[in-house]
Every structure is written in structure tokens, then in C-alpha cells.
Length: 519
Image (cartoon, rainbow, N blue to C red; front, top):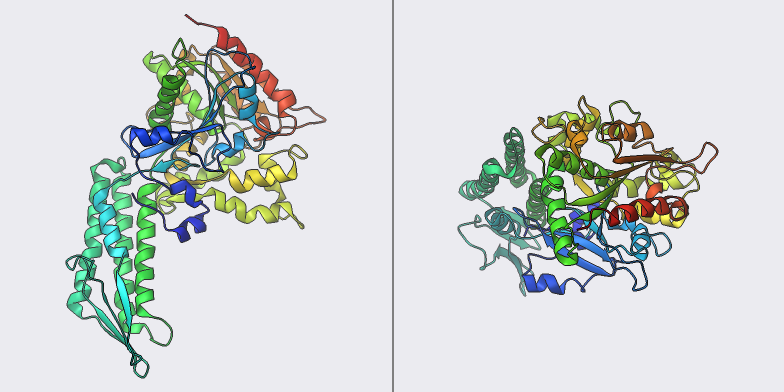
């Protein structure tokens, strides 16, 4: 398994727990249901394997109390882009998930690939082995009695994989590096060989269409830059300022980190829609065994967009969605006519620009600017209202949300989401299927909620999607009053008034459709 180096995790704001573990046997997966880390505040933690990938998706489960009303369908919660399960369960007194389970619903939060406790198993073994071979130099330093020491290649490294070299260091003469031309050539061949093998895997189907050559070219350029650095270093590195061994291994490690990011963060919206969500739904149905084989679902932001896309995709093909009812919170398939702040993503519409930014460390960026938004002189205070309206969240919970709920996302995902701001609205990765065009074919009841001060998904954006659905199946409501309180993007999920004003409205809808269409 390609594992991010701890320093890199720290740099991009991804806790080590997000990338822990490897593929497990069915017995191990069963055991992991009750074996959860302290960061998971759910009753149970489950893992779901995703077909055609090595991702294991984390599912946080909240079991209903014994005295709660009996329900017929489990409830699936889907969160926004670049977020984990924390937003649905901030604290015992501010928990969307706990409230739903207290009302009798067996509640599950999905953490998609790259989010929260979801992990990736062993993948691309050929690349993995090559990266490890290069990055693990196996250099051992032997200190000698006369004050001299030698640095040699460790015996456990394959001599055919790495160039042989020896560095002698003495107190009187400083460092003398013997690294002849033939050995540099072998190092260059090793690095470029890794680059070619990785590029070959990409071209065999890891990415789609024109993206193959773009990413392959990026990897080749990266490899050549590393070789140039090493060659220049042999001519210019001064022993008074840098130890060659440390310098060399640092460059190799940087190279490995960048390759891992390019390979690991390689998914888009359609991966969530076609792989992650169906795998999770099948798992929940197998565990809960609803009589009609359906679930109820609530999606916030991107989560609601995924649910709309499911209704559209299945409706266009005349397939059953497996959903008894859907609630969307601040979601739309078409933002073209709204003044959404998400238009900040539009620069990513240029593919070349997107490929130059393979990942977007949303969590790190928000954590970095949070002090500027929450403390005098409040230079970036306008960022706060994108998340929650004034006085709608306790400051400590708001801080917990900002610092713990957001993750790193691939530029490829954001690139596809920018189509929601273009003519026709959100489309699939091929650019030929526009999700909003087939919403009228759905037969699933939908409750669409909006916040009056939601600057990410304004009410008019929500309505752009709602108006396309059969009128007898959709209910639309905007929360917020002219004189307050007001609701911003997250407030529908976890504000101080949500349990009083929003949750009961959702429960009424879910209860109605939990009882309908049973065999």
C-alpha cells in the first residue's frame, strides 16, 4: 500500500489515522465493527470494500435506543465535498446523527474515499515496490575509532535496483563523494524506469481520456527534475553546509511523496456516484434487511448532489434507485443562475490548471486561515458566514467543525463539479450526460431544504433543481426569517436551532415515507 509520509500528512493536514491499515480479511473486517478509534463517536465503525478499487470506506453507525419508535428503513447520511463524518456528529448535544437515531432510525454516515477513516489497501504493487526501493536507501553509518566513518549501501538493498556509491568522511579532509558517471546513469535509469512504469499504468486505464497523457507527462517531468537536481548536487554541494546522504535521501523522499499524491488522489464525482455510494447501500441493506430492500437518505451539499444524480441516472435507465425517500440540504445540480460563492472554483475549469494542482488541501487551508477569520482584526471574517450565520453556532463547536471536519480533495473532483456552473449543469466525466435532464423521470419523493443566507448554495440554486422534478413528489422549504434567525450552508445540519426547527421537519418527512410502499 502506498502510505503518505508523516511529514506530508502534516503538511496537507491529513491525520495519520486517515491512511492507516491495509486490506483485511472478512474476519478482520467483522472484528473492526467494534474496534474503533476514539475519534469515531458512533456506536459502531464498519468498513465497506469498493468494487474495482482497494478503498475501504468507513461507515459510522448509530443504533436506535430500545425505546425509540420502530422504523422500517435504515437511514444513510452523505456529507459535503472534502468532509468527514464529524459534521453530522459534532457533540452529544449537537448531533444530526444522534437525533435521527433517537427517533428510531438505524443511522449510517458514509465517509467516501479520501475522507475520515476510510483507507486504501495495496494497489499498483509494481509502482509501490519501485518507490520503496528508491526511497529506502539503506545507508548505514559505521563509526570508527580513529574518528573516520564510512557510508555504504546496506546489504539488504538489491544491487541491481540502485547505483552503488560510497561516501567517506574524515575530520581533517571533510567529505569526498565518489559518484562516477556510470553510477549516475544507473540512478537516472532507475528513476526514469519507475516513471515509465507508473505512466504505463496510467495509460492502461487508471485515468480517462486525455488526462492520461497529461498526468504521464507530469510524472516524467518530475522524474527528470529529480535527476537534474542529483547531477547538479554532485557538482555544487559543499560539505561545510550539507551532508550528501541527508540531501540525497531528502530529494528521493520528495519525489516519492509527489508520486503518491498523483496516484492516490485520483477520483472524481462519478467514482462516488457509481462505486462508493452503491457499495455502501448494498452493505447497509445486507446488514439491516429492510423488507422492501430500500433505504432513506439525507445528503448535505455534495451529498445531496449525489442523491439527485442517483435519481437522474436510475430514472434515465428505468432502474429502481433503492431509495424510499430523499432529503437534500443545500444542494443543486445547476448553479448557473445563482450567485454562489462556489464560483471561486471556476478557474479549475481549465484542465491544464487543474492538473498542476492534483490535490486541494481544504482542511489545511481552512485551519490556516481560521485565526484570521475568528480573531481581531478579523481580516477573513467573511469566511465564517459561508459556513454558519451569525450567532447560529457555539464558538467552540464552530472551531471544532472548521478544524476537524474538512479533508484533502483531488483537483479532478473539483474540476468535474465546476460543470455545475456551466450550461446544462453538472454532467458526467464524459460530458455527455447532464444529470438534471432526467430528474423528471424519478419516482422517489424528495424534501429539498435551503438556508436563506446560504452563500454556497443559495435558495434560487436549490429551486433550479427542484422545479425539474414531478411536483407531486417534491417538497421545497427555505429556513430563515427576514429578521432572523438566518441559516447559512451548515446551519441546516448543526446549528443551535436545527434540532428545534429543522430536524422535526425532516423527521416528519422521513416518517411518512418510511411507512409508504411497504410490501
